[in-house]
Image (cartoon, rainbow, N blue to C red; front, side):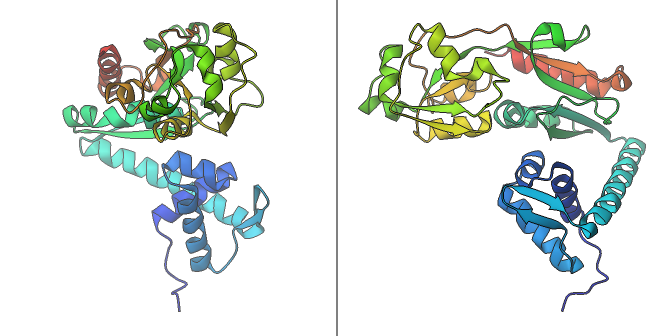
Length: 302
């Protein structure tokens, strides 16, 4: 029999708070870098410990129960208190917290694989990465730095440009053994890995846009597979499931290791780039300036 007086672990509280805030196990997992099933198991364990249901699980939807709403308010307050106390103690002990927000794809495919280089040269800085598709208010949400993708006109006057972005087809080299890609028209013999964007918020990432630029708007591939995130498309391309539209800074390492190849020299080049944006409240902090300088150095590497 479980001891009902045992307080749930912080891992369980973090998983629940994220799931309750997003009303989605999948989005909570993306934020915490866990799988959807891992978050689901955390919630089930928490519900078992508490002896109550925290969510109504509906078809493709979650809703908090009355108990869940009460517990969410308490969990959010506890986590906020703990984060504040942790930051204060780290500051007193010489540790320097640094919170960074960016997109899931940039975090998974570019930032995290390089992050050990920064922490190795800045051991006193504790970096916290928040992956979110929302454009967050840095000062309101207590964040120090954002790495955002978009046109320069929306980046702000104090934004630091890291690099531009090119969009071009990429695939596993094993696909080309069966059906070569000598020219764009040969894409008709392949499955195209498509970004699922029903509201067309990111047209430059759509095959339709690339094919129009390539002069073959009526091309019909043998099939398509759709994904909700770019960070899902690229592993599918590496696995040989089809041809994806690669994004120049995010597939650079995979092209270097030959896990992916770019069969064509042509590329769409939208007027967009990645920018580092510092919160007003974090301006002047040496650890923030050091992180931005490190980002610039990494971005400059070829």
